[in-house]
Each structure stands twice: as structure tokens, then as C-alpha cells.
Image (tube, rainbow, N blue to C red):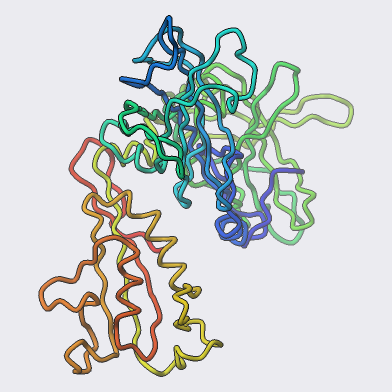
Length: 453
């Protein structure tokens, strides 16, 4: 039987529910982090709407016919086209209707490049390199999403490396999360008097819920965790999104299995109910008998019953919802200056201070984390301390401000943290990082105050 996870608990844990997983974007380190923990990467689909003001007029008789092209800038500097708008005729202040969809991934920096062209309307399909260039703008996707109205206005300029006109107009990017529905259903289920499928112990039951599709088949959408050695199991709450079950009247197949480590799980019984039917069971505080089909095709009603202890509909808020309401992340750094872990002048040390100023592994980690987090911190000031080393006045301290100040412990921008490493009289350093979260008062549900990386 498929769709049983083979993670730490050997497939006994509850499957992920009500999540948005979009197969886009890629980062080897991030992918390894999730895969090594049996998790899935989380993406959020974002639509970009574009408009411009005071574009340069490249036509003689009429006005420019502008079109915008959006690119992702890869690590190697190459541009990958994500999408383009339609052409708007004779306009220097276009508001394009065509949207560009991009998968937002919190864990990585996503640089974007916007090119605006004047398109010869007789030749829409020719490559953009043959069109008249009107201007370029660049930003990071996080810069747009962390604005309160999720809109960012940028000055258009000539291409990098080209000397040209300065007043090329402005481009406004507006981002909006694309969610079919935020409504989710949370249920708590239990069964009673299940048939025992084991000989020397009791069954280890779990539920699998599947959605019936138009072809008549079924697609599994979630499963509960396994409750060991129990014929009256009560499972943890399940959270199903509307994307998973379709509509409240869509029929669902709920199957109860006895877990076997071989993967050949024994069917205890099943029933067919819609989400609306399950809600009625909860309201009536009644159960529904499981059934099983015999080898001869006869359906047998079993003694075992399914009960819905709790049922509620609610809105599921996304990470971007929290960001829009004032959610902030702050990057904090603590640097170990003790000599116990080796000499930073030794190239074999992970903390090697390269004379050519090339960053070592730990410095790269600080830069990569800091570059992601900085867009979610309104003042972009990072607390940074050192311990176990000599301060700027020569005294040994087990806690000192990394910037050398006696009264301030914050450093502006992530790259200045690295700068402080180079100017400090260090014998060795090791970076320990943490992320604290501040959430301004809002109508959103509360969240954890500490997130461990």
C-alpha cells in the first residue's frame, strides 16, 4: 500500500496535511536539509503585477509599445526568463494585465531582473534582443514581499556596464500570493470496537483518507499516525485544505488499516463519507459503522465505528500573511574567539582567515543566512557578540560587542559582521547563529517566539 512515509518512525507518523508544495526553485543545501529529515520543501506561488511611469519614447510618429520581461538571476549570473507581459500599444505609462508567476522560497535569496522593451507590433514573436531596450531594474523577491502593501517601485536604468540616459522612468512591482482557498477543516477522529487482525497482540490501526476523482478511482490525500496495540484508537487532529478534498460534498473514502512493518497493511474496514457528512456525525455525536467486502463481493457491516470528536472550519494563514502584518526576523551572531579549536592562520582550519579575503565555510554560512534574513528585519541591524577573546582595548572578555562599541551591540548589514572578523585581533572564531522572531499586534494567530535554525 502506497503513501505510507518511511521516516524515523518507520512510516507510523501522520502524513503532512494542508500544505502548499510547489515543485519549483532549487537549492542543493536546502534540498538536502529537508530530505535528510524526511520533509518536503515548502513553496508559495506568487503573482507579480507590473506597471511603469514615464517610459522613454522610442517611436517617431507614435509612442512606445512597451512589454516587460522578468528574469531570475542564477548563481552564475545567467538570466532565466520567468515570464513576460503583453504588449501595450502607444503608452509611456503602461499597466500590464498579464501576470508573472514565481515560486517564493523563504530559504534562498531570489534576485530578479526586469527588462522593459519597445516592441515593434508587426514582429511580436522576434527575440527581445532585437527590440528597443527601454530600461532595466533589479531587486530581490523578498524586498517586494516584505513591503507592507507588497509593492516596490524601482528606477529604470541602462543595462549594467552600459552608459546611457538616467531618467528612463520607474517600474512598480506588486506581489500577491495565489491561494485557491484558505479554508481548512480540522477534525479529530477515533474508532471503537475494531476487529483485531493480530494474533499475539492487538491491531496497530491508522486511517487513510482518499478523494474520489471523476474517473472513479481514488487519490490518497492524508493519513493519520499509527496507534499501537489499540482497538479503540484516538488519533491526533487532522487538517485538510479545500485543495485536498475539493468541496464539502465530494465523497471521501476513509480506510482503517492495521499497520505492518512489511508494508502489507491489513484492511480492518472502510466507509465513504463527504466532509459535510463527517460534520453531521460530529453534530449528532453519532458513529458510522465500518464495512468490509468479502472475497465473494458481499459487503459486511462491522461492529467497529468511526466517530468525529471535533470538527471546525478555519482560515489557514501563510507565512506571507504574517509578514504583511508586521512579522520580523532578526539574525543574531555569537563568535567564539577561544584558541581551543585551532589556529585560523592554518589553511586546514574551517575558520581559516584567507589573506586574499576569501570567505571560509562559516563566514559563507553567516553571509548566506544574513542575506536571506535581512529583508525581514526593518532596521537591518544585527546583534553580534564575541566571547573568549581579547577586546579592542586588550582585555580578555567572555562577552563583548563585536563592533568594538561599549554601548551598542548591533551591526548594520550582514557583510559588516564579516568585516568585524577581519579587523578583530582574533586567534580563532566559530559562529553560532540563532533567529528571534518579533510579531507586531495583529488579528493573526500567535506564533512561537523562538525558531531554532
